[in-house]
Image (cartoon, rainbow, N blue to C red; front, side, top):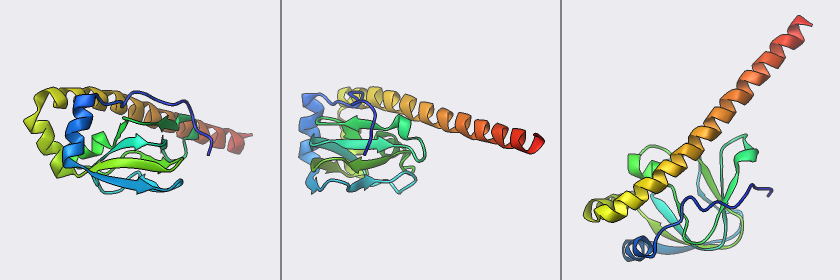
Length: 153
């Protein structure tokens, strides 16, 4: 799998990691496993403990990003309850803490300082997703434009 640069935009603090460990369940995934899929129903957040995960957007491989230890994946969907916007596929064997949406949202309500941290990470991830979707629209518009030119010629 060819992926872009490793990203650090979703790194959690030790305090958030400790709290997630209290409410999450440790899980192990082999390489090439899917943690969650774009447009799939929310299953909560995944804190990467060990290994690497590629986050991607369908048909936009140039925007693929690697996330390693202490990265919290699935924030936008977990905060909103909407389907995931990205696909998360393990690149190596991976250990994660899986925290259900209910447990995550409860933790955010109980610990405003951790909620602020998660919200800042959410903002960074949403910016990445918006960039990816804007790139997809540009590619689609370019393909349409090329298609019309081919017909005119």
